[in-house]
Length: 611
Image 1 (cartoon, rainbow, N blue to C red):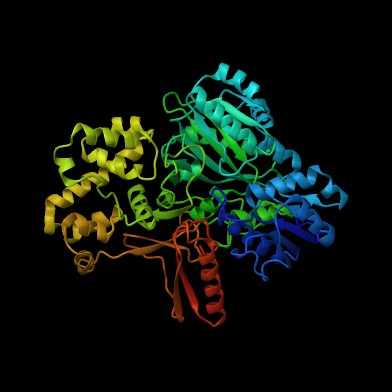
Image 2: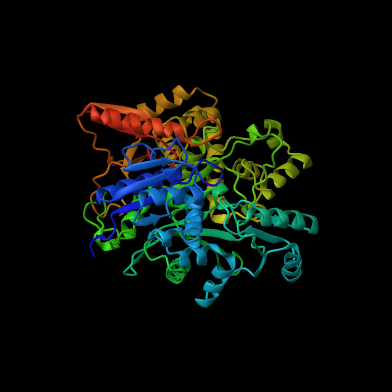
């Protein structure tokens, strides 16, 4: 079916200022949507208040309004511009909430503006906790036992039935704002009052605790002919109880059996159909009880989300671009894959590598803040790494954080490993039990101290499969120490690099210089090659040079003879360094390309336009 010809002018709403839970990933999605709609000949009107974004540059939308993203302001712009449609699903929770308010207060009807991407009914059914619960029960999906409160009196009644601990989730907030875990009466009263104040609908979900369960996400897309594709499966290494934005995640999901994955896949398709998102992408989150395999649905975002940016970069499938084209009438089978130039968007991505995301925290900037990770997001950025194995991908991600870490560095004194005291063991147990920014490194320390796989898994809630691979890394470090300088031969060096060890980490272990390791590696022919992200596990030729390094034999970079300039990106967002540097990188690339240079972008931030 061709694109809609009855639409001429489309308004997009951005996500506004960068806040925890809503960052530059929505600049990425908005920029893609503007480009996609302009390609199709539509006039694009953009409303955003963030001057550091790439989407607000004049060349991306026909008309750009740098104005507050409020229903009153956007209504005035609608009155002036008279768009045919409003696309609110690419600007995060901010844009979605404003779109809902404009539909409910009659502004869209008054100016004959159609809501595209997701209907008002679909948005409310996904975002309103009670309506979502009713919809899921209707299609036979299990949910945690729960109740909805609009006052403290209702909350006390619900907690009397559910008991402690309880998960609290305010409705219509971003990044899990106001979410928490209540373990006692005092916490419960304080968190409920806070959550009710934060929810624009003064509603809070109180549900049974599933802390410690395994958490998964599926990125799903659907067109108006009811074609549905699963773009990517994502598994949280950290168990339920840590906000997914603060959790270390890996794609594709690693610990599901094929049967479990197919059941989850079928459930996600039933969800997007029941909610009614008929054009675009959605993020569906599940939890699985590791003891008995019980599957429950947590929530569904009827819009492009933070995970959508990660899934796009992990698979090479441009979710925001495809979502924009679906919103104006195309079907998945009509949209070509830019990477293969052969397969359509209805061809589900398949990947033959492992992608790891690790969040970036800046608690050192706020020493009085609570650094415990909970259901409310606290990270300010994230990094993504791609490797051929779980171990390689994980270690590459750890050194991408720019926290002066190059692998599983020891967190304790040297004497503590030789003769650990009760205090040391108690400290490590506490670090494993309480989620924090440094827990991953303490998992390595626990294994060095002789903690069993089972004990580490029990204390952290991390699946034993992941703990096993961390143990293999730690055990190999012991082999390196035992081998000493004889380690610097081709066989062991190649094995270390295939496991993701950085030259600097090897130098730390061997007590030599990083240059010595690098020289030995090159002398033995242990050098990286570059593989392509192609959406199809090399089944078709990839024409887009989207690359990652690894230590194998075959190189897929195929460099050209053109003049080139390499641009180094800003890495993960943090306090003091954010989206503005991605803006600089993108414009640097544009300028150099206009001068005839080929540009090579190097970055590890999956939220950015530059990647």
